[in-house]
Image (cartoon, rainbow, N blue to C red; front, side, top):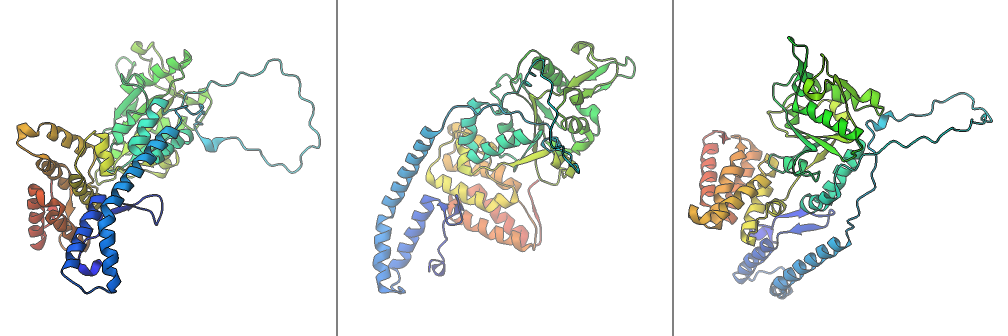
Length: 447
């Protein structure tokens, strides 16, 4: 019946099941205000008793929404109180879980085993590294990205030598990656910016000088040498290598040495030969061992500028998808907005998410900066949001002329600009320009 009146339904998302939905409260209230207005102008109820039920529901709605907000806040407080701060026991991450030894079948098993000679001395257990995600960071990850993301990351580091973070640009992949360890000085974290021209091991590890025959090491190799020495001295704290823009070039071309040694558990098999006469600054070492304390995490994007990952890389890695709701992005950036502003952002995000133009943590940080300087900029909160959405969200949109899906999206954006976006002048003008371009058969490409 609501659809027949031409009233827009509120934005919602599934939360915990097919029939459980999270709905934006102000949007629900706005929808019932429009329904009440439509009801006052028409008496054509399907059933006369519907009018009484509707008005009773409408009168009680604000109280119900307030009760729901209070109960949700109370549930969150109880959940936080129940959470244990005790860190999980350290579990050794095997370099290659599939390489565990399996018994070889035989045609006949002996009935009795010969007695084993007495062991001279019990074997010492292999020292174990500490968990990758340090306890002090767990609550922050859970509160910012959700308990599901924390569980996925913890399981991925236990089962695979390489963990890959996938998500839209600006969703917070790098922000999360460098905060897995409690390592503000970055002594145990190495960030490697992968280059589009990387073609071999020299780009990652370094090269042998053809004149002196000495090995010229990269910061990555220096990090591995330092990690090996720390492990030998009994330091079991985790160390993390973060590959930024991992798939901007073909990873197996320059990552082959690591892909090979991470398959094995024995120290002798986890050693990488550097070549040459060694590096004097590193004590003349000619090889480096990949210790169990070193873990690898990569961030990837999925757009036309990147390379698809091969089955060889995927078989040795675990992929964790990272998503953020606009409210979570704003919370991560410590930005507080009114419900009207939040509703405008949420509905635009729901339209543009499939285009990879979501409202990201970077956009939230930019909004925070604009709000802090709004007096000098001569803007109110709506004006600051208008600028950020125009420059950092709508700027990612590409629309193709005569594409029915893009034309449908443009209709949704036009409705948004006339409703929630009516106070966002810059965004409305931009969307109106898109309509004119598509009407004349021109594609919309921002940059």
